[in-house]
Image (cartoon, rainbow, N blue to C red; front, side, top):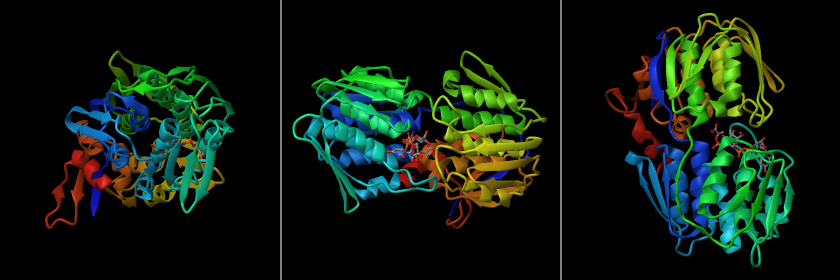
Length: 441
Ligand SMILES: CC(=O)N[C@H]1[C@@H](OP(=O)(O)OP(=O)(O)OC[C@H]2O[C@@H](n3ccc(=O)[nH]c3=O)[C@H](O)[C@@H]2O)O[C@H](CO)[C@@H](O)[C@@H]1O
Ligand SMILES: C=C(OP(=O)(O)O)C(=O)O
């Protein structure tokens, strides 16, 4: 079994560079399926298990996909006739596989994808995606574990109001509407930076989308889209994770490539906790404190506090004096990591959708299991300040979303290793190869 072993007590210092954003690259690669002409060249692609998975989904549909991992570039040629089905094998690995629905439906009038089901953080339905397609004239059939969408001729532009600002529904509907006949007005949509990145990509391909990043997006459908070159925005969640790593260890770290406009809510909460955050030309510098103050956080859609930073901030709150409260409003079950923190001597309890954290906890090293991707990162963060050794297992979650976090933290001065205990002698594992292995292709 693979484990990450962290010995607490080292202050982090130096510079770390963040990768392209996982949550931007997945919809962008899916959107490449719409290009009926030319090749898409996607740059700043992080070498993650999820990227291998989405590439495999596209290959399975008959698109030509090359991943030059050393140069962080994905090439997609979707100009051949494509298959329009995505089996459960892929959707099980990564829910973002449902993002092929919009592009395929718009281009071929048909798409069939395995229903994603729930996951460790909540039930995660796709009803809003489907309501959007229906409003554009598609017939939806759900049965035998699949969702199938069909339309005779082209999708028709429509006025669509999302009951909640779902990131995935906004992306799927925006991609479908880009190739629909007429105008689509999408209201109460998600405003995440990754939505803006996708809209920019689609516009370069020939789409006519305005308003991405606000709550109303207007899309004039066009007849065809072509492959183009695009660079993925930096990963704000990876950046936020390293910001917490600096803060929790009382270190001084420059997070290169981090975009402060994408991280306002995280910066403001860190400052409330007595952490110094300096916006520099190359990125964001974070200087930790030995006197962290308690605060409260409520997760919300962007520009509110991101749910994907909730567990990392929980680790930091464990080291703050006083009572902190985290309220999770985006996913109904994203507190699985609380039990694991408790194994490290954390003083906290769940009350409904909130967690009450009594600081300052003297964290102790323990064997803990990652319950999801961000929980994996949060347990490593707690391990950085735990007394003794923390062993983090279930690393398949981590490999979905962090490129070489072990190497990056070690370069900043952390005492951290990744080992494979199944090997006869305990050997360090080179982290970058793990994404490919975790994707199991
Ligand atoms: C690949 C990717 O970009 N993943 C991100 C994306 O996930 P994802 O796109 O799945 O998240 P959504 O914004 O869609 O989900 C937000 C909430 O809306 C609900 N919902 C969503 C769709 C729907 O049709 N019906 C419905 O009820 C979900 O159950 C959840 O409670 O945004 C989440 C919220 O910022 C992040 O945590 C994920 O990291
Ligand atoms: C929940 C996340 O991702 P996904 O939607 O891909 O599960 C995440 O990135 O924290």
